[in-house]
Length: 238
Image (cartoon, rainbow, N blue to C red; front, side, top):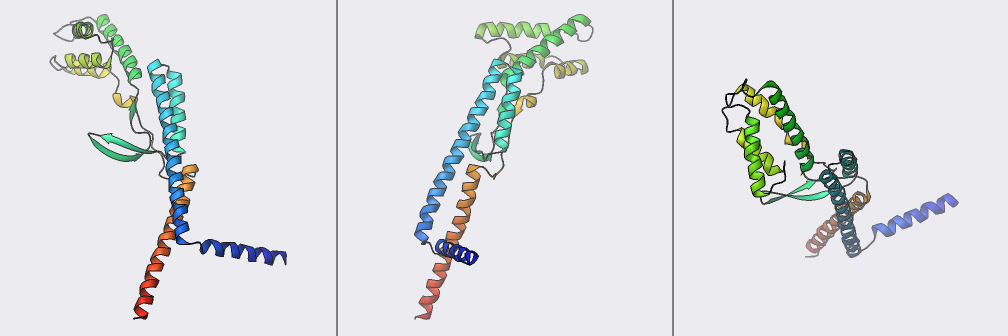
C-alpha cells in the first residue's frame, strides 16, 4: 500500500509540474537566466583575480610564485565556464577562456641574461675573428644605452630590447650573425599564455545554464503546441 501511495504522490507532483502555466515558466526562466549571468560574472571576476596574481608575480620576478599562480589559474579555468570578450584590432570576439597574456618581466629578465651571456662569449672568442664590424654587441649596447639615458628607459625595458634587435639587424647578414641573433633573445611565444575553458562544465553556472536551457526548450515547445492547437481549432470552427 505504501509503495502505491508513493507512486500516486509522484505522479501528482509530476502532473502539477507539467501543468504549470506558461507565464510562470517564463518567469522562472528569466530568474534562471539572471542567475546564470550572475554565476558567469563571478567566475569571470575570479579568473581575472587569478590572472592578475600571475602578472603580479611576473612583476616581482618570482619564478616559483609565477608557476604556482599559473597552475591555479589553469585549474580554475578548466573547471569553470569562463565567458570572455576579446578585442582584437578594434573587433570584439567571444571566447571561452582567459584570453592571451604575457609574462613581460620574466621575458625581459631572461633576455637580459641571454644578452650578457652572448656578450661574454664574444669577448672570450675575440671581437674581429667572425665579423668584419668587430664586436657588434658592444656597439649596439653603446647606442641603446645612450637612448636609454636620453629617454629614461630602465635597462632591458621592452623598448631597450626593441632598440637592441633593431640595431643588430642593421649589420650585414651572415651565417654567424644570424646564429648570434637567434641565440641572444628567447622566443616571445614561450612567455605567452592562454588557457581555454570548456563551453559547459558541471559547476554552479553550468548546472543553472543546463536547467535554463531545458526549461527554455520546454517553454518554446509549449508555445508552439498552443499556437498550432489554436490555429487548428480556429480552422475547424470556421
